[in-house]
Length: 217
Image (cartoon, rainbow, N blue to C red):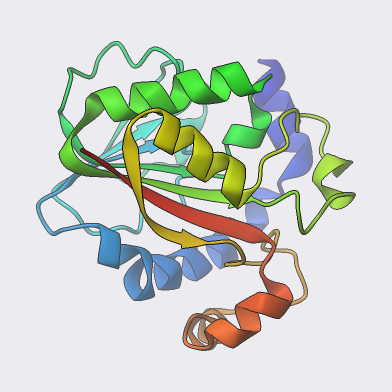
C-alpha cells in the first residue's frame, strides 16, 4: 500500500494520456527495432504501462507489485504481481524480450539489481533481449536523489558491467538517450519526440537516461 500511496502523490493521472502519446512514438519509432512481431514481451516494473500498452508484439505481460497496475493495462495485456527477483510464474527461457524502464534505481542495493537482472536472464530464451532504459547518475548527480525511493546509483558502464558479469552480451549501448523525465523541457509532444529520435546529436545535450540492450547467449 505504501507503493501505491507514493505513486499517487508523485504522478498526476490526468497527465497519463500525454505520456501514453509520447510512449507510442517511442515504441513505434525506436523500441520496435528490438521487438519482433511474434515476441513474448515482459515489462518488469510496468508502472502505468506506458511501454507495454504501446509495443506491438505477440504477447504482452506487465509485472509490478503495485495493485493498481491492472487499472492502467490495456485489455490484451496480462498483469502479474510478482517480485522482480523471483518471477516464479515464468518458466525458464519463456520470453523474447524483458523490458525495464526507470526501475532499477528503486531497488535497495546493487545485489538486488544483480539478482533482478539474473532473473530476467533466466526467463529469456537464448538470443532474447534485455532492454533497460535507466536514469544515468553520471549526468544527473543531484536530481537523481530528488525522489525519495531512489536508492541505487547506476551508470551505463555499471549496467554494462553487470550484464556482462551475468554472461550476457551488450549489443546496443547509448549513454545519453532520453531526457530525465517527461517533465523535462524537451521533448514535450509526440511530434517533438519523433524529431528528437531522428537527431542523435541532440541526445548528447538533452539525454540524461541511458539505454542498454543485452542478449542472452
